[in-house]
Length: 334
Image (cartoon, rainbow, N blue to C red; front, side, top):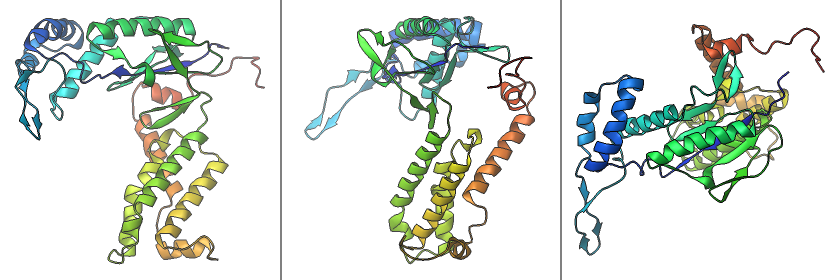
């Protein structure tokens, strides 16, 4: 039995998109040459695919308009263009280059799942390191930190947290203490140390209540028909609640909360006070919502299950079918 602790380490780079050097000189030495090595040997792109786009950043100038006129023109040394379709590609190339140079694919540090070693999860500038011990965490972190600094990115210690499934000592990076937490938000989902989904579901229900409250002015309008209001709730409130529900383990207590939230939405839509003695059946009969909120969640779960089952040799399919984690003979079942 593996008794090693699982440590999750969300890493946030400081001012990521604004820290990418973009002057002609920097692009020539720092971006083009590095990307040439990365693209040619690792990412399997050719340099002529990206060089013309990088030249669009060369020699950029800007001016600031104020109430008293405009400033002198000045050179732009950092940053990517907001709204430019190239900007996320540039940052993704930077991120991929950093992680590959850090050697995370070759290192043995990480969580072992179905014969695979997984030590990081990444989406844009959100990076989570997943070692099994403090020693592995220090090793992974220092590798990533060194490679980030080589391209002008620094860790934002204030937004960087440590979460572990067991006790862990205090951490300091560059003289700043890293906060230890029992949960953190990753891509809109609440990740907890114990893996319990109840906190996640409660959070989504609270977010749904906030959205429903913000729609009050629309739902009070007499110019909007009841069916339209119902569709608005289904389109704007329910998606906030069920976001990511495909991975939830919903217990009986959570089902009651979800059903109660749905009835609260319909009562609020009909302006029925909580003191009114009106049955839930009469509310549902007047609303005629069709599929319930819990039914929507079940539908999404089944769709996701079908999507996974159609895959070939995927880690998600192996996990879903229970192909790993089987108990050996004589294991204590508690």
